[in-house]
Amino acid sequence: MNNKPRKKQRIEFVPEDFGFLDTVLRLQPELRICALALKRAKLHKLSFPVNNPTDILHLLPEGEIAVEGHVIDHSAIQQYMVKELFPIRNEDELALRVYGALLRCREDENWASRAPANYESLLSEQRLSRAKEA
Image (cartoon, rainbow, N blue to C red; front, side, top):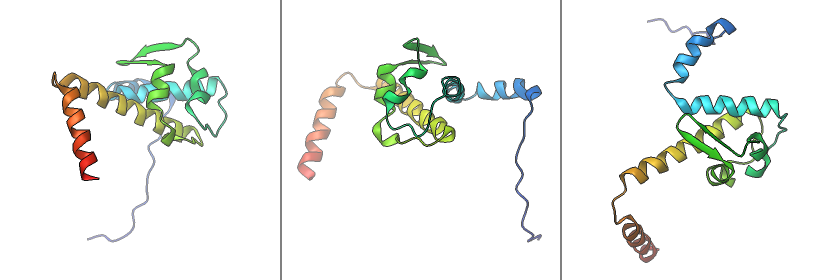
């Protein structure tokens, strides 16, 4: 068995690879939105650190955008870009935080689509049960 440490390799892309990358990004549409967020951050010269959701609302100058199965507006940004995601220190963190927020949104949508008709009473019972345990 070969015990020599392996050299880590980085996969590099050139502009001619855009078609391949576009194909792969279709597999995970939320990543395309992350790329759009970075593109708009660069276009609008977003300065870091970003300390709260209101600091990024100007990246959506039209107020709302419907892309890749998500409707993104100012209220959605404030709902899913929660205070725990801040500060955002750089573009890498921006992409990561936007991705996490989109996954939370998708999870909420999935839960809502499967929720039973009496979900409100179930949630209420669960809250009461937790309160008794505390």
